[in-house]
View 1: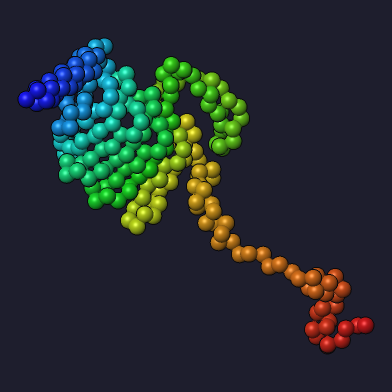
View 2: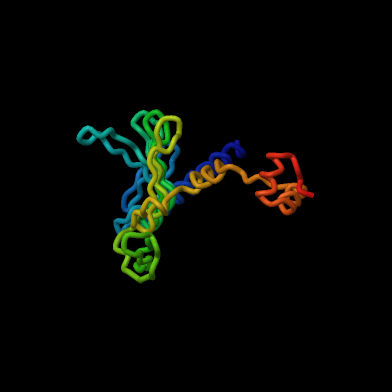
Length: 233
């Protein structure tokens, strides 16, 4: 009987400790919700800033299908990897954020799961709102100099953008340098350049004997040899 009483008392203390932990953890939030597993979701702190993991549902708008996205907020700004799902649970986008703006590789999929588009972005740090950008020559991609400017946007296109069609083939390609769309001659993807180089005919390697023959006989002598069979020696 005494052992049973001790077990009940221990369970009660454990429950109280767990309740206090949850209360202390949620005290920093002005608003939040709990997942079926008891995880804190969609929390807003006392300053009104979004914090932690969020799950956001967006309904259909003007013919555009609805979706659900999930990821992390830090001080009201999206951070890290965010995933977007269709209303049927299929993934339609994987985006990466830094300082509240897109940063790095972004991928977008069709509702059938096919990769449709890849984008590369660069995010700015709001606490260091200046950036060094290149100054290009008129009508070319030649960099003439650099200048320091105020970064007024959270992020800009920076890097390779690829648009895909059936079979995973690249149907369209673009390349950006801190928001500037580069011209055709400087925006070939590395994979395309490599393929072109591989398709070039390989130069035949001449043997030692061939080199000695070419040195010994001039072009005219070789023609005469082919005509009358005489070496001239």
